[in-house]
Length: 441
Image (cartoon, rainbow, N blue to C red; front, side, top):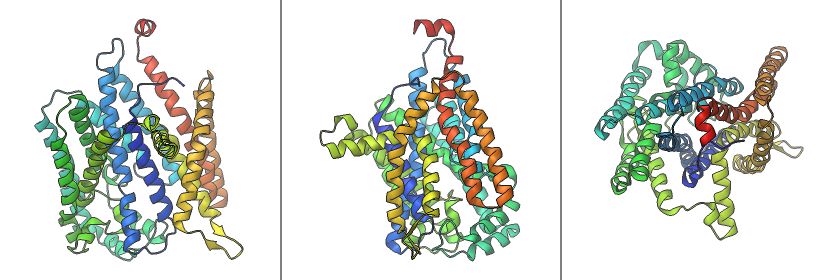
């Protein structure tokens, strides 16, 4: 498959790190015993995964803009918006597979967040104007949506159902769906799409701030110490953004503000302590990697080279990685018992198993995808397979009424999405490049 641009090893590494953290967090949370403080702290570290992924994805926007700014004959805006629209649409295969079709999931968030950032990065706005926009994007959903959740009379039933869910519950607790349905019923569809799960508000600021940081430090070669100070203040000061935790009744303690106070805050993460602290850690990780990380190929010790290589490859193949990891998590949950006594595998051991299998399977699957993508009818065949897989899933789910059969039936469409989207992106680039320019390139 043709490459679409140069790679940046620190960006790939951080994106791969985010994928690994996300995998561990998803695996550990599924059927996890009630965590003690140490377990909660581990989960809190895992909760930095999506923010790091989005922050670094904002940097990818800047590298794209800079690499294609003066490229003659290339319709930059048309290509970027078209590729984002395809990503958004094909991302529904993942929504269906994960049961999140009533709200945005991670790939739609990437599409929306990167388009928002791309359009702003093409302007000549001064830095102060960018910060005004970023502040407004952060405050509007916070002062609107979050205040409504905690105080609106029509959401009293939701708050009652939420209070019945123990704080130690995992992602499979049955009360989670009931409370979420009560909240959804009282939330307009557009608001739900913009704010629930991976709705772009306030996630879009992570893309935006990541892009601003990268453009300042890496492109314009400005001094990095103001960014170090800024991100350190966000990380340290984020937990003291009290007003959400006060309204939610979780108290004024440090850990009450630092850790996700309720299970629902994994679905509705737009409160100050989470957004500010995760932006801080993502920024500090990038600055540290820029100063210290030199790429897998430059490590002499085999162990260090292997770890760095695995992270970089996971970042390059993040679409495939994220889709594959849910398949393996669900499979290990179905067959996740030890011996005839049926003892459930320790969640941390299960996470290690899923991570090992994912790292093992991603490279051969990527090579298989690249071989298939060279065939002239690959895109049409993949889309047809996607449609057939979804139809088969609907038939299985309707006949058996089991989530497992529906998941495995629809998984083929998600895997086809991971296979076909990179090829569609390459072909869109070709369509948006004039033939004369392509011939002389």
